[in-house]
Length: 609
Image (cartoon, rainbow, N blue to C red; front, side, top):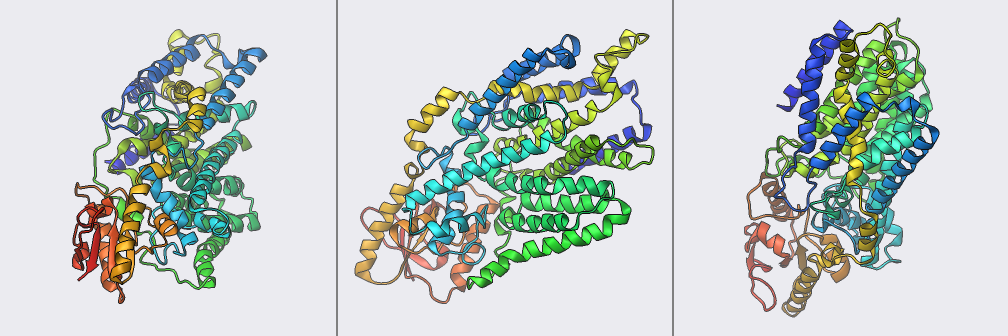
């Protein structure tokens, strides 16, 4: 169905490009599309699921409709006085500041802890002495943890987790900053304020039903890991794509961009890989013919250097990359208990934005290559930005199709939607038809004036949604209060760490008398090893395990069991977390048997048969 949607979008776009003019049918299509978009904005996705983004809802939909009507009738952006523009800029900046305040995360304030344990565990691997993609399989990031190695003897284990929370917060802000900078480059006047208005409010929406945990900042693999990778490529390499489009080649910059693409792919093997692939495709299809081959060779040379950098680094530290580990979690996670995405719901906004942006971007690139096209550097940049971000989002959404929780995944793409909407508006603003909306010709009929506005209704809904998203801006008083007086359940150590460490300590005391090596299997295995000094036999732990069957969970168990079977020297004792017990049962891989001791649940301590 998803590929069919992309194909239909391409066909419709091709038909419009071929006609190269609007028709009367466009008015009906635009009105129908706008109604569908408003329905998607209004619908609440999965209201029974607590802890996920719930969708925009009634108020945002109403605000979007009101703004569309005002811009179509009364408001004239070009005629707003300086004082009104200053006031609007202050409101935008205040909303952005409030959103950023609500996106700060600390070790004691880590909403959605159950999800974030995985990222913390990945980053603690090098500190404990476990090497990502060598001695364990990272779920999200393989590189960030190396930043902590110089500080392993300086900070306590909990202090290292606090440093991780700060790093992820800073990288989240950096992602938003890069996106804002990318958008600001495609506008003329008031470009910074416009960029802020399009990027931050829609990205950091906070559900009134769920509260702080519904912010995308609470799912720490999204902004700082997945989206940072692509926007770093965009910030470094978009200018060169624009220059290549017009036939200018900067060899060293293109080589550098290739290196960046190769490195970030190691750190984000889903969205980073998608951004890298789209960048290469745009060089292949978008560069001027007389620079294409040389540009592609230079970029590929840099890409090879970037990809080789991590294996070479591992060899220098005495480790060898295990290719069977690379990308395992990404492949297995695609089957996480498939569930249909709720329709109507925010997918009716997210999917049209990214699909039509990609289709329109590629069509515009083809049109702008015509000899009759007027030279317009700003329009070229808007076109390239729209094509890259839209195509990246289309490829990235494949990772989320049929995933277990549709709501959180739709929110991941809101930042990309904001950039795409800004790109669509920047392109439209360069046309005579757009300027004629508020300055119609004297001899034009009422039908001509209103039909011209009706044709832009879908774009108007997109733009006004970005502005209306300010209704879901974080409450600054509540955000500040939560940072100081946070709920105990939102603390990293308030989840299940105390119970696990108590179980490991009890098992450690018992096995010390019996003799034999004790290993831990369960979530947060790197942190538990750091605190208890008990090594971990965990290769990958897709926390949280569930009693419900899923293909991904089964693959994780199979991979762990294959690892146990292949090991010549197996630990005599295993101590499991309660979630580990759910996943592996009281007879781990058929190799161990339960030993009951006081203080532990049946099956938590197991001995090699």
